[in-house]
Length: 220
Length: 389
Image (tube, rainbow over all chains, first blue to last red; front, side, top):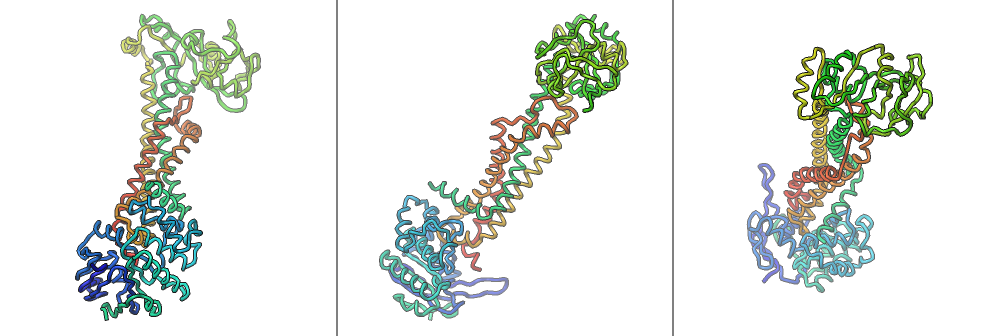
């Protein structure tokens, strides 16, 4: 069973009378435990594809299965459940809650899934991303690379099967970017989590198991 | 555990915009303070009024005909009643079979020292029989045939620092009086009164054989209507029962409370709208943060609960602060009300008890729920990727 199975995945945005096809007829299979990089220029549809894979958005048409479950027709609470239980998300600009400490940010998904008893997992992950000594710090007190490591720990705290990272190195210099990809690679090996990462940096994409290139919303 | 974590998230969010949160909380506190104080005024005024009327010592007051509001106010607060009745009326009332005791009164105000006017009441021996609780702190009743003696109410003696035997000049009367006695604190208007023998009062005001009122105690209180009807047949005389006084003064309060109540309701409504507005701005500002929370697993219910909890926290803190301010400021509020109302009985007019305080805080919680619903609903409807567009 594929971790991700997409067939004819299409997302069209309607603005007034105008229709914009952000993604058109994408076919995709990602096996469990794979580390896949989605590449393409800005506006190629990478973020749209990750949003669909992450159950943040719904396709206009096409079939999408995550871990064997058809999510293309799911709505409301079912999509929430998928996001909460099976998918972790890492954003380009970290998106940490500025008022919460590092530890509280990582704990947040546990709060939403009513699983605060798994707090050991938070400490374990903070150790894994080498930030246990910064657990009481606020995001503004951390560097960009450190914030992204917190975001990765947050994405993994619920033990998701799939981790989606949208341009996770986009705001970092090459050294920090390499560190983040290395960390994701490490998590992919040790946690067995399937990772789909979007980037326009081919050097980083080359470190993935496989690359999928998007051009104008289509896989090429 | 979950709830504590929730509260922690909410409190940290409120600390993010301290000034905004403080101002919004202040608005709620102010409205709750006004509301609680107003309700406290209703309770305190009624209690003080009933206590004060009970301590008048008589069942009915007979005065010359005039405005009952004025008479009621003058009766309770003192002052010059511009109409007088003849002593003959007292003799006629004494003959009534229902009458147990009477006391003749002559009320007026006179300049005292340089500080202004004080209530001077001419009384006779039966005055103390009507008020057995009015005892002497120092000194004693007027000497036989005395014309230059005063008995001071507790507050007057304390204010002017007068002791037995001290001179007490009544300005403009060309005569200096001597302090014969000082009454104990009674918690009524008597504390602020200067008492002189009835005949002396009549002479001071140049109203020989005239009275401003006759206090009457009946043998049987259930006969009050029959007695009143008989007295009403006497020309130029009206009867004011203590129940009427109470009703009249509570009516006056009721009118004041209606207007203040309207202001309080408007204040509460403005506070609710203020909190709602603050929360809507917060939701707008945090579109991205809310979207990210949805992305990492928050349900619509979680988002709704977070926003509602923020509004609830603001209002609850405001409610507790407002209730506290109302309690701390109740004495000051009492004095302010006393300055505004035409008559205010002695004692603390704004009485805030535990039930009222809890009610005020519960009201604030209700305001929080009300103020959080629309922002919470709007936040919960935000699409997880709305902030990306």
